[in-house]
Length: 253
Length: 337
Image (spheres, rainbow over the protein chains, first blue to last red):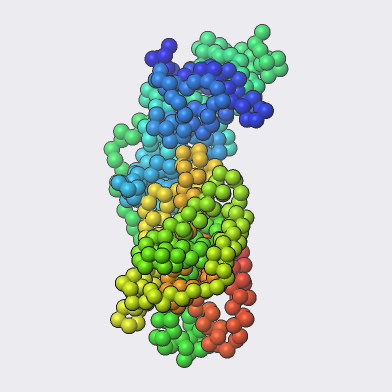
C-alpha cells in the first residue's frame, strides 16, 4: 500500500482546546486518483485538508508522502512536496494585482530574493490566455483581483494551483458561489486532473458533484472516518441513503 | 482551465503598453497626492510670495524634513502590513542616547553610530516580538513602548540634554549632516537613498511583496505559506533602525541632544504617511506618496508662519490632515466595492 499512495494519513487526531475536530482518522490518496471527501458541517473535512496542506499540525498521527514520513509539515513544505490547494475562501489578496496573486507566497525571485517581475507578468499573461480563458483586453496582469467576478476569482485560484505542477490538488468546496456553467467547467477541470495523471482531494457539499468526478468517496462524521466507497461499486441513490444514515446514526449499520 | 493547456504553443508575448486611462485608474492615489502637492504649493506661493519664491526656504526644507521623512519610509511599510508604530519618536531618543554613550566612552563616532542603530534595532525587535508572540495589537504595544523608552531616556540622562559639539569636524559628522557645495544638506541625500532603497525593497523584493499581502489578507498569507510572523517582526526592526538613525542625524544637526527628541516628529511622521495615501487598513500604500506627503507636511509649518498665522495652528492642521486623508481613503475603498 505504501508505495502505491501519494499521500497517507495514519491515525490523525486534531484537538482545538477541548474540541476534537478529528479522531484517529486514516486516509489514503492513490496515484492518479480523485478522492471525494463528504460529510456534514463540522465533520472535519476542512481540518483534514488543512492538515494535508500544512496549515494545521496534527495533535497525533503520521503524515506520509510517497511512503515517506514527514515531520512538521508546514505550508511551504507541503507546496514543495507538490500539494496545491484551491481554498473555499479562495485565498486571494483582493487589493493586489493578478500577477501578484498567481505567484502569492511563491514569487519568482533571483538570488537575494529580488523579484523577477517581468517574468511573473509574462507567465501570468500566458496563463490568462491559455488556461483561464481571459481574452478580454480589460483584464491584464496588472488588474486588481477585487474587480473580478466570483467565477474569475475561482479561475485564478485554480490556475495558480496548476501552475506549480502539483501532484496533489486539493479543492475545498470549489463550486461554492459558482454559476451552473462555471460549475460544469470546474468539474471538467477535476476530470482533467485525473487525465493528466495527477491526484486530487475534492470536497463538496453536493453529493452529485462528488459522485460525478471522484473514484472513491470518503465519508467523515463528527471527526471520525465513517466509511468509504468506490464510486463504481455504489449507485448514487445508495450513496445518498448512506449519507443520511450516517448523519442520523453516525454509522452505516 | 485544463491541465494539458500548458503544452499548447506559447501565447503572444505580453507587451506592457501604456494606456492613459488605465494608468490614471491604477495610480489614483499617487496622482491625487501629486495634485494636492501642486495645489498647495501654488497656494503657498500666492499667499506668501516672498517666502515661497526664494530658494532659501527650499534649502531649509531639505535640512529639516529628512529627520521625520526618514522614519516615515519604514513606517509606511508597517502601515501597509496592517500594523502601527507610535514608539518611533522615543526610539529616536533612546537610539541617540546609545550613540552618545558609546561615542563618549570610546571617542569613536563609528562605534557610536553602530551602538545607536543597534539600540534602535533592539527596540524595534521588542515591539515586533510582543505584537507577534504575545498577540497584542501594535497600536497598544507601541503606546506602551513609547512611554517606556521615553522614561528610560529621562532616567539615563537625568532629564538633561547634552552637547554634541565634539562631533563637529569629524568625517562622519560631515557625511551625515554636512553640506554639499555649502548648500545641499546631506541629510536630504540620505533621505533620497533611504527612500529609493525602501521602494526597491517594497516593490522588487519577496519580503516587500509579502508586506503587501499580509496587510491585504493575513489569513490568505498564512494559507499560502508566507512567514507572517517573521515579516512583521522585521518591519518593526526596520522602523527602529531608521528612527535611531534619524534621531542621531537630528541631534548632530543642532549639535545638541534634547531628551524630548522625537516628540515633535510623532504627528508629522504619521501625517506624512496617511497624507501620502497609505491605507490605515493595510494592503495599499506607496513610498512616493509618503515622500511627497512628508514635504507637504514640512512645508505647512513654514507656510503657517509665513502667511501670518500663529504657530498654534500647526497641530490643529496636522490633526485635520490625518483625519481627512484617512477618511478619504476609507470612502474610496468602500466605493471600490
